[in-house]
Length: 134
Image (cartoon, rainbow, N blue to C red):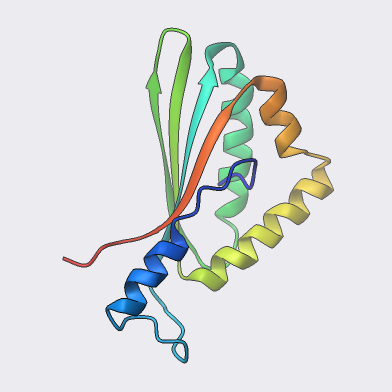
């Protein structure tokens, strides 16, 4: 969703696990869907501004090639709220192109994600996950 501050990417671990199992050989591009999951800790005083920005971002990514679906979840607390957003993408190529498109859109808007996060004291963790096979 946001291409912002902290990158906590487990994709490399998932790819290594797949190679060990014979899934993702170097000559074969994976077409497995990937899920981008972000977790935000937002002070309640920043909630309205955060939710407005989240809506802008979610609306934009829905227009990008390879986007499948997204969801957003909230756990409201007394002093801060927790948000989890997910975005499902067709494959790694779609995610890479989305990152570039979002970065270009931020530049066009004059939006600086690290400054936004710092100003509002928002913390974020990010990961790109593959669904485990049953």
